[in-house]
Image (tube, rainbow, N blue to C red; front, top):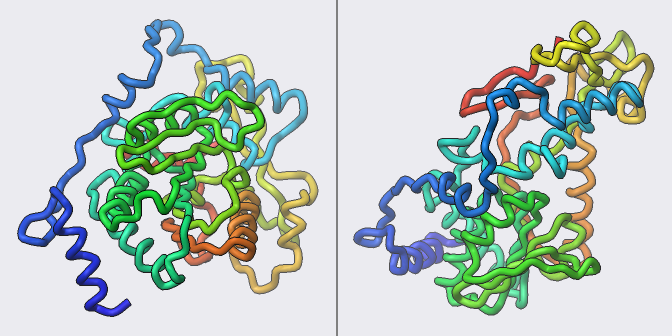
Length: 344
């Protein structure tokens, strides 16, 4: 895109933004809306002191599962911990913002989302401005990025030419997103519907919520994913002499009856190769002793590629990581502090 075209895009944004002064951006710090979102969507449950000492239902569920079927993969453990319908990390609470465990870039300042939207408009025009089109966000968090993108697309007079689709598994977060994005919204009760929640913005743009990317209608799509893939479950592999073996999670037998001890689980190495570790048997030149592999990432990338091949589209994936030189990157982030994930 030429410098002149970019100046035109930024000029349009500046002329219509209440955060601007003399056609230049004024950096603003977003208010933390975690308290408001909790107040509007979270059920009020009174905590009892003795409940804090007991293991939660998810811990009991995982222990029972492992004792019944044997050690589970790290990927299976992650999937349960993050998205278990009853006790999953993302399912029933707001984990973002100063009162949560981490803050993402769109939450800090609106300029991040507006720059993403400028990219969307630029690339869409390069491809001939096909209409109608879809804006799809994977794992939208509170919906802040989508809200900023929606605002910019509306300023470019694109309302009515596109729909927005949120791929969100969390019932709690979908309600928060609906409050951010929509003038009105309603739950869809039809079991055969590809979406479970729908709404309309103040400018009339339709918004749909889906559990899976596969449920999003086939059409020209602009897919956005910000810190989505780095949260997907991974399989952990460890080199054992000539072969890769998988790291599994087992119960900690040393304190099987001591629920006050936080070390309920431990790492173990698979006795033989697993289907996932077999995938890496033929890799030559690998110097790492430990690596991580996400089957879910492969699956979703293939879905995106197939959609683009049949219906057209573009994707912007924003993540933070390394260039393949690191091994163990499994971490816990609690109250904005990064902790190593230690099982003894």
